[in-house]
Amino acid sequence: MASDRKRQIIEAAAQSFAAFGYKATTMEQIAKLANVGKGTIYTFFKSKEELLDEIVSGLIVEIKAEAELAMDSSLPFSENVHRALYRILEFRQRHQLTAKLLQEVRNIGTAAVQEVLAKLDRAMVEFIRQKIDAAVEKGEIRPCNSEITAFLMLKTYIALIVDWEKDHEPLTKEQIAELFTLYFLQGLSR
Amino acid sequence: MASDRKRQIIEAAAQSFAAFGYKATTMEQIAKLANVGKGTIYTFFKSKEELLDEIVSGLIVEIKAEAELAMDSSLPFSENVHRALYRILEFRQRHQLTAKLLQEVRNIGTAAVQEVLAKLDRAMVEFIRQKIDAAVEKGEIRPCNSEITAFLMLKTYIALIVDWEKDHEPLTKEQIAELFTLYFLQGLSR
DNA sequence: CAGATGACCAAATTGTCCATATGGTCAATT
DNA sequence: AATTGACCATATGGACAATTTGGTCATCTG
Image 1 (cartoon, rainbow over the protein chains, first blue to last red):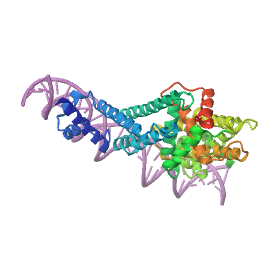
Image 2 (image 1 turned 30 degrees about the vertical axis):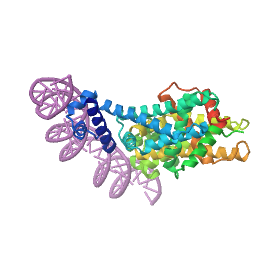
Image 3 (image 1 turned 90 degrees about the horizontal axis):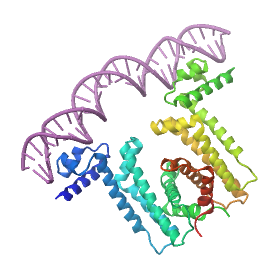
């Protein structure tokens, strides 16, 4: 069946990308892993790049579902946004494929990989933005430019989780939640 | 005179680093530009790396002075921190040398250049941290972990000025000040 | 003789082939 | 009609030569 073969190919490619990275994975390798001829891959995907793109698109859906699951509509907005962000970045760090791609983009600057990760970032910002808009609608928070807010929230989280560790002891999940609320949602001024 | 020669060398090196980058600048080039023998450079600096380090150290002093100048003790903390941060990043972007080094670290990953830019970052965070501590001392803002706060402030600024432009129209100075106050100092919750 | 210098060296970088590997195509096959 | 692997132009990587470069030091000079 056609869709079955397509799935096989996607799974083989995802597996290989995660294990060896995008560049180090050859189309022949994928074909062998998927038990299809190399040409077959090109009946489903225009190029290697498109194959990666489709896989990451699936990943985005997965991440959104994870984040959605982590949230709890009975909790206040601030708690939910923290949970969602934390889950998103945890996923991004833990997931073999994203971890490998993140590493690859640091070492080599493959254009395709860079583009696809940028797309992932945009999707995550968009996800948060929708949550913000919903919270504004419900009157949980005051109106604001939700795109910039979502963008800053993600950046702040990445700074706290990824960048801070470069020069300091890692912060715990609780510390991050506290800091995020303190600096971002509550503010310093008085 | 000895210190005169040293200054000549530093200026020649700074000029060449800014024009061609660290890697592309050779010691012979610097010597020629400074009108000294190549060996002379090594009577003042242990290595090319140390030469860069000394130049950047001078730059840090310059940046601090710039930031200090931009501040006004009669204004509230939030306004001053904004002015200082904006001036720091404006300087960093405009200054030929830092711009070139920033570009170089993106393209190649020269260890020396990376280290020296990290040092620059640390110095800027430390500068902000001292301003925060002073503001806490004066009771202008409530007590907080000044190191993390300074770190987050710089990251937030870089995100707004540098990262935001990658996908969107640049924000004006006023917009950035407003956003910074809104999200960072005032908070969203109510 | 103290400080400056440039010839000199080992190590790193760059340039040049060439053999191999790879993404993508397509005529043959099932 | 769908699948395939031989095939092709191009990209990549390894080996080796040539060049460059950071750093040293014996020599020079004022």
